[in-house]
Amino acid sequence: MGKYFGTDGFRGEANKDLTVDHAFRIGRYLGWYYSRDHRARIVIGKDTRRSSYMFESALCAGLTASGADAYLLHVTSTPSVSYITRSDDFDCGVMISASHNPYYDNGIKLINGDGDKMEESLLDGIEAYLDSDESLPYAEGANIGETIDYAAGRNRYIGYLISLATRSYKGRRVGLDCANGSTWMMAKSVFDALGADTTVVANHPDGLNINVDCGSTHIENLQKLVLENHLDVGFAFDGDADRCLAVDEKGNVVNGDHILYLSAKYMQSRGVFGNSHVVTTVMSNMGLYKALDELGIGYEKTAVGDKYVAENMKKNGHLIGGEQSGHIIFGQFSTTGDGLLTAIKVMEAMLESKQTLSELAGGMKMYPQVLKNVVVDDKDGTLADEAVQAEVRRVEEELGTEGRVLLRKSGTEPLLRVMVEAGSQELCEAKVDQIIASMKTSGHLLKIK
Image (cartoon, rainbow, N blue to C red; front, side, top):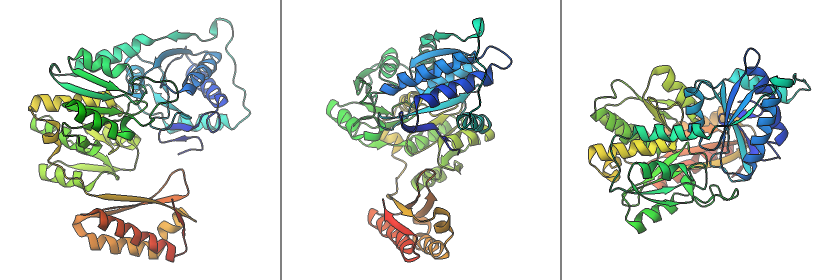
């Protein structure tokens, strides 16, 4: 990760960490970079945050000043930008969003011409430019870029999603929590077109209420909606709709690990999974791995971040991967996590198998998990401390095959994340505290956050 761009773009508080000047200069660099040998075409989407409109204008000014044409999808999802970038042959795509973060944060995500997250080499070039006094040439006369309304691209993406459904949803009662974000219009359009009886909440964005007590980060609202309205299933998205969590007909949460499990099992039953593996991050629950073992389905683990999942899938040709948080990638249909696509694929598994969501997800048992963040004096030094390592090994031996330990450092804060999965919540708490105690004894622990 660089100074500005992390695994999911340049993100921070609007006009404090990420300023309108940053957006303008990013536009200037992208416009110059892609317009060196042709008239560049760059597509831009945004979520519903108040600041997204400001950043959109700044990006457009920078792009067009450098001679590139800026195509505006307006309020749309991150996966739609990825889809349109690759399907309509754009040089690159830009999504303005801070995903599940509060409204006062925002971010700029860059997508390459293949619909994947941008290469590090280009991000390094942008970062160097942001920290320099370099003056890029301005386009003049007819070479100044245009800003073009491209809402038709968003509509084409919606049509693509609808085309992927294998059956009508007629008679199915579906709840949708749009997080007052990117899907506030799109989700209902898709499910209505497919014949579902839809009940929609958090679909009245005002620029300040994105993710506020709604969406995939506040799944309890969807649970209540499903139970009170006797719905068959509910889907909750995050601010930019690259995540999806579900709620079954009994009100139980179906998280990303459950979706990976039931989707892989469904594909296996249809004879289309072949020798593919499920790609997860190291944060997936051990219950997923045990359930996949029972099915004879292999899996691979990557570092935290859907970027690494996508890279593994592309390199090895795997069909599905994702994160417990709901970033699910269906490799045959998308290059990134896509909340609406995930909902459609879950509906397919339900309808084609003639099972409820609780039945589909019931074969996987989630192990209790406790994660605590601890502020330390030196992340690398703490990880390398022999006493801490010895305590981690001791806990691992005590848990055996019925638990696991994960100790990793934060990429953005001076803290370590201590996670234990085991047979009970009490045991998890005890073992996490046991490891943290070793950090205190060794003199590294500053506080538990």
